[in-house]
Length: 172
Image 1 (cartoon, rainbow, N blue to C red):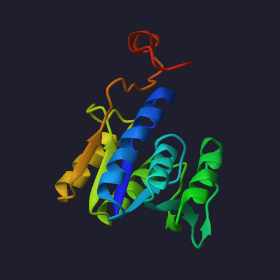
Image 2 (image 1 turned 90 degrees about the vertical axis):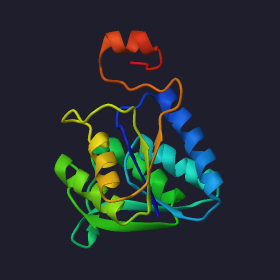
Image 3 (image 1 turned 90 degrees about the horizontal axis):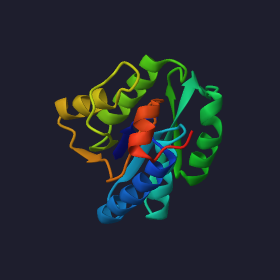
């Protein structure tokens, strides 16, 4: 399996760039593996769309409370619905989707059970909000190969007007 993780604060234009790059990579892998992503808005949907468009197989991980799906945060509900429509399979993983540490734990589990990690990462260190750098290091420490995707022109919306003016990609 190929797992996908990445920054949660990607700009809309960046999501389009990422979707295109991921699709090209999945096409090169020619269906040799199944892709897996944790349900959520942003990167998971771009990844799911790319995998589906390339003819790949997609597994979506849903938060669970015991043996039933857990309620997702409002921002992730529509995205989870789209991912389920694109998915070949959905797996329930017990974790609280509102708990940052639990989400990181679910991502670590996903990485441990995969043979490759695709990380949409700008190379920045973990900042207490974003765990992408941690997850890349986690995969590398376990010998899981990591493919970093950061297309030219990609940007994050860090809420900084200076950053937004400099990058010119994010819309408020």
